[in-house]
Length: 125
Image: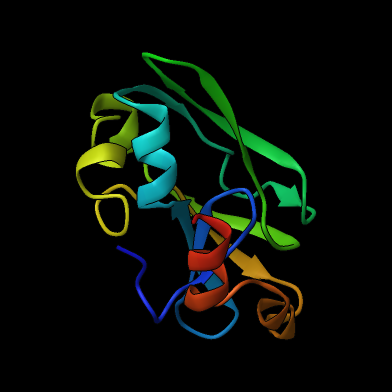
């Protein structure tokens, strides 16, 4: 499942445009399937300044530990603290309840540099 309305990164993260310059970030269905059962999620602190490509957290599963990257430059507005108690939401609902953090981006035009659903589908073939 690759939702058409989202943008994607080569690191298997999805980006959803919210209000104004705010975007929501999570990992894709493909990524959570590859990871297996997620047992721990570390997220960036609200207020942190991040640059595109920075490692801002990690996802630990029964198989491995994977870094979470900031796909865009900006400031962390919010994070999904529910994942600290229920990391399995990343597996069960990666595009909604399993979201990770919101970024207020410096340049909303930078979203256009991310992959669309078709390009992401080709990447995961």
